[in-house]
Every structure is written in structure tokens, then in C-alpha cells.
Length: 596
Image (tube, rainbow, N blue to C red):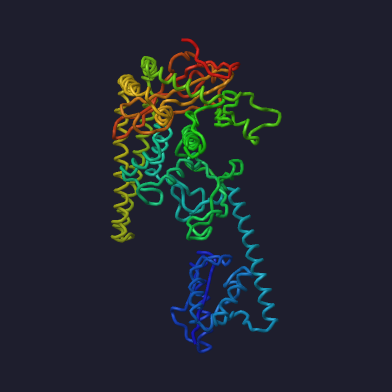
């Protein structure tokens, strides 16, 4: 007779408490009392798997073995160990019996008697009710602890933090990992301040030898996005930031829906987040907000957002009235417009209010902006004047010193870890193999910090190069100017993305904001347009000295291939990047440039 044993516990804690072994010991004792032998290959167990799901490796092996007609009896302590859901219980019992295996529950042996079958159904319904009740109590208990600030919402801390090993869910035990925190600070500086794209950050981290939060190399774009969007780095832990939705699409044509994961994580509204506890901050609010603005801008400028008609200024036009980005609209018989989104999306409208902006003819606006761009490139003295205003630069000495101090703190923390590790090895607390492994990891992180400090020193040396930026910009204009006449649509679009920061249209006025590359290789690789918060100020169209490019604040995005960068001025009420005004003739529904 072939007898199989099956045991299950729902949590890892129960598995560590050996409750699974206790079930198996009881089942073996019962089999020995009946004179049945149990082969080791017929012992099936699931440690840490919920009874509400049928996706369990031990249960799958049991069902496969029974399907091959190799089992006569299956011993289980009680029905809820097989499944918590009554429907699942009935399905499994029927399936196993159909394959010739008799299911025996030790707590209440079952037979074909209708009373026993009724009792099995009742116990299955009670088990399902009990599981639902326990799940709801645990959910409400976790929610109370989160709101009280006594429970962390995660067991794996974000990159840059460490947990107290004695109290891994206690918010009071969260502390900084100085080496990783220095990497996080540099990521925000490179992305939000220097304007480097994500793929450049990936290459730079790979070149520095810095592993990802999961220990992989190189970093993935999703890992970088997770770091750049995590509000924990502002010094506050939040719970219930995401809500998991059931999978709706197949990950592969060969797999069923939901087979590759639990579903899609969707970010909930910020008002629904639960503030748990404060932790040490790594970045500031202003820098974090700049990173979020740039990520939103990247999503807006993605080519996937326009599938039907080509628009030369796609994603670059804003309504000067409501400060929203304009959408493209194509009407019959072939008229194209840039339209304020309040005219197309009713969900954005506030009752009683509607943006009075008119439709903007796409062809006329495209021609106007392109002619003005050609004129700017033909007059590099305007850019030279802007470069003279940018001599002071964005890089301040105290910011350089702060970054260097962060790297030194990270090196000091790693040095202390190395000393404690050596003391533990000398005291015979840590074996030699473990000591060598940890020593290699610490040495690698120290080398990464050294490379970061070397790059920081190199960046600091390049800040003295602003005197030559005007010559670089003039050379750029001269090279680009030679091919303006024969540029096709794609070439014009690429040049506009490189040079135009925003086109704002309101009340018959067109305002073009430029951002000009400041290095000899700036036009060869795409990087972020330096944008300001244009929605918050009332002086949007009232900037002074609007006849020339008001470019200040050099933002450099360095790479080993050569200096890259852009000039722009952050919005502070006194100016905007490279502003040039134009008038729109509303009566004739066309755009015209004023006489200069």
C-alpha cells in the first residue's frame, strides 16, 4: 500500500516554530500504528503558503503523484490543512478520490456516509469563515499599528537605510547607511540638477561599480525610478502608497492571466497615504520636487502619447491662461490645432469656469517658432550676453562641500564597519569565510566611494570653464545654422526638442523659452530640458528684458565623452529661460511676429 502525508502552515513564523514537523510526526505515528509504510518521496509539505490558494508546490506534487495512480491513501491532520475554501476542499477531495487515493483526516475520519459528507462541508465552510475573520482582524490590526507609528510598512528597507536586526519592524530602529545614502544624494543631483537621463545614470553607476538595491549590476531603469520617486528620502515613512490590482493582461501568450505576478501596483492619491514615522532625511524637498517634475515631463514628451498626426511642437505648447499643456487636435478637412485641454477633457473643468483660450493654428505656430529659432541661431550675440549673466553659475561652494562631506561620512561609516568586523573575527565570533566575504563587499563599497569623490573633484574643476561657454554656444549655432534650410520634419523636431523649453500662448501673445547647449558635445546626445515651475507665478508673461535670451544658471550634465550642459534660469519671478515675445492676430486667426 502506498501512503502519502501532507502538511501545511500559512506563515514562515509557524514554519520556524516547526508546526509542520509536528503535523508530520503525528501523521507518521498514525501510519505506523496502522502498519503502513511511508516512503520519503511521498511526504509533501508547504511551509508558509496560505490555504486560500491552490498555487502551492507541495500540493502540486501531491496532485501529480496521485494523477499517476501511485497513491492509495493520503493522510492529513484536518480539512483546513488541505484548503481553507470549501469549494477548493471539495474539488481536491473529488480529484484525489477519482485517481484512486482515499483522503483520510485524522481529527475526524470521513466515510461515504451522507452525515460525514455533510460534516465535511460544514467544517469547510467554518474554515473559510475563520480564515476571512482572521484576515480581517490582521488587516485592521496592521492599520492601527501603522497609524500609531509603531509598525513599518516594509520588511526590506529602501536603498540607503538599514533596520535594527533585533526589531526589524520598529520605526525607531531605522538608520542611514552612509555609503548608500551618498549614492542616493548623487542620483538626485545627477538627475534633477545636472539633467542627466536615466540611461546615463545607469552607465555612470556601472562605471563606478555600484550595485543596485537588489545587488545586481547594472541598475535597471525601474530601480532608478523607484529611488527617484520614493518619498521616504524626504524623512517620512508612508504606508498604503500603492494599491495592487488583479492582473488584466497576459504577460505571455503561453501563460494564463496573472501567472507571472500578483497584479499591477497603482499609486494611490497622496491624500490617502498614512504617515507612519519620521526617519533621517537624505534629500531636500526642492530637489525631490525637481526630480518629480522632470519625470512627469519625460512622460509627457514620450512619442507614445501621439499616434495619429505629426505635430512639430508636440508636448512643448502651454496655455498661458490655465497653465496646462496643450493637446493636438485634427479636424476635417485637415486643419490642425493646439488646444487647451479644458476644452477636450470635461473632467478637468470646474463647474462655472472654462478656459477662454482660443484654438491655436498648428501650422502657423509651427512656422512662427521655427522662423524665430532660425533667427536666434543667426544671432549668437544674444546667447553670448546670456552666458555673461551665467558666470556665477549654479554650483555653489557650500553645495560642493556638502556632497564631499557626505562622501566622507560614508567612508568613515564603512571604516567603522570594517574595524568591528575585524574585531569580531579576532574574537572568533565570525568565521574566516564570512569575514573574507564581508571584507570584499566593504572594500568594493569603499572603492565606489573613492570613484565618486574623484568624479566630484573632476566636476568641481570643470566649474571654472564658464568663460569658454559663449564660444562653445557660438560654435554650436554656426554648425547648426548651416543645415537649417534643408531640414526635414524629423530634423526640425529634434532641434526644437533640444533648444525650445516651452512655447506659451495667451491673449494674442506667443512666448518662446529657449535652453541652449553650452558644450561642444551637447547637441549629440538627448538630455532633459531645464524647466521651471511655470504654473505658480503671475509674472509669466511680464518678464523684464524680453527682447534677448534671459539665460542664467548654468546646468552641466557631464560625461566622459565631453562637456554637455544647458543654460536656463529658474523661475523666481524675475525672468524665464530665453524668453522671446510674439503677437498673435486673433482677428485673422493667424500668428505674426512683431517688427524688431
